[in-house]
Image 1 (tube, helix red, strand yellow):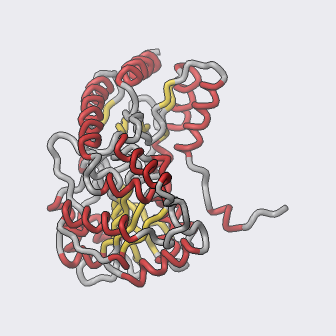
Image 2 (image 1 turned 90 degrees about the vertical axis):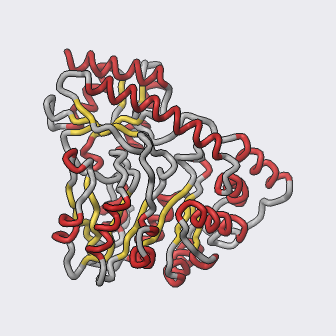
Length: 388
């Protein structure tokens, strides 16, 4: 059997591969501490679970419209208006099976062969894979600690060519936790004025910000940015609903929304019905107390982990503004992040993700979406590994 040539374009997810390996070693009875998965250790809020149970008991178990039920789409519209003063209509919202599915639909609906897509680096592992699979060409702009891992307007201007179709922004960022400020987004918007470049703004971690930093949505900084921005979001990270698979797109162009819905209709059809009803209470604020509880706890863990890592000789890390990751600089130890992670896992039973997966060597990613006890033990093991 010969597998389709298009599959050769796709690389397996290193994040998922390392998580699977860590789980396999744990199942074999080995003492493994995994900091590789981007998944909150908290349970889904009870109010959300109750809404799903109510939907099931109420017979809400049938197919829905491909792009989602009206009530859930309206809850998304209300949320975007309340949080960012953005206005959308029902025909401009598409609900998908997680934000990753939303991004797949978007890249397939937007990218033609040879289109260039600008991706700030370090980046979430899936972005370039989706671009290549759709026939596009990723164009990377590298950022580092000097700009808090954010690209500048001048870097963006230099990267734009006649073939540029899309700019991918992720704020707060996976893997760095960087958040673009309102002024930085305005400056990016000024560079894009007069072009047809679309902004894909992945805002999955918007509710997880620290140090009093305010999150600003890309679409809210100007009317021009609103008209070119497609917002991707969901409930996996902030509401601890990873397994529920709920993501959505809000876009100013109903033709694009229709194209995504058409593709989804031939692939998965609707998101499972119970999840859609459960999502309403989260979108409407009934889980806000739970979200804030998790955010506060994440910030405590972050503060401890940043200080502890920076106290280890030869290691350093930027203090993230959001999300739940540390992007740790290991360049004084090695530039080979794959070997670093493999040796650490083998000798100390600690699973991290190599920076290579995010397009940047000399770094590793640690997720602090786990217990404080695990973080303390894990960083102690990392310290022992470095000292050895």
